[in-house]
Image 1 (cartoon, rainbow, N blue to C red):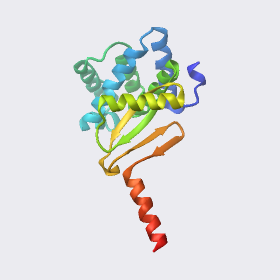
Image 2 (image 1 turned 120 degrees about the vertical axis):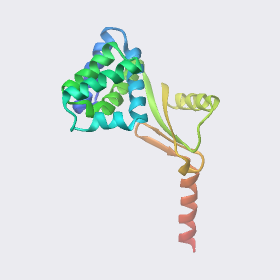
Image 3 (image 1 turned 45 degrees about the vertical axis):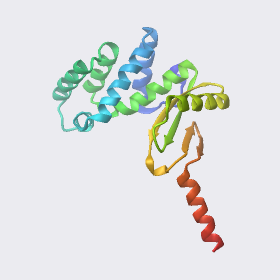
Image 4 (image 1 turned 135 degrees about the horizontal axis):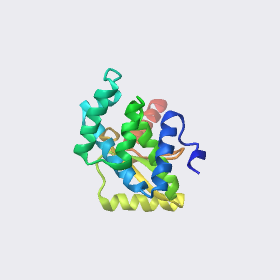
Length: 186
């Protein structure tokens, strides 16, 4: 089933598919997703970890030892930790962010969910997030997971990307179109 998914491809897709099938067979899909999300958050927060993951300068042994220490400290164990160690041993740790993204896509497809990328000028309240999820569910007919990114440069409003569709209701875009219209008129 997962191997037929065209949304994941390449090295990261193959690794994500293998991990997903193993997690599904052992009925730990959500636990693995939570561990990968935790690791991804650590990657985002730590420049040193990002350097360890991306740099080809580190020997496999050094990378493996450092990764083991990070995983122990973060409380990531089991399939997730073993998987990350396999990526390291195979010298593919540089692709971990893409693997995590592909794994999330496989989990969403498995659960019948879809994911929307939402860009807002300032953080949304839980009430507004729930309202947005309900609105998107009415459009798609599926549960929608939100990846929310805060970008003050859009000034206000929001930009929603759902699959191949994108709705840009940002104030920045509206102001730019007014500016463009005024240039044409004057």
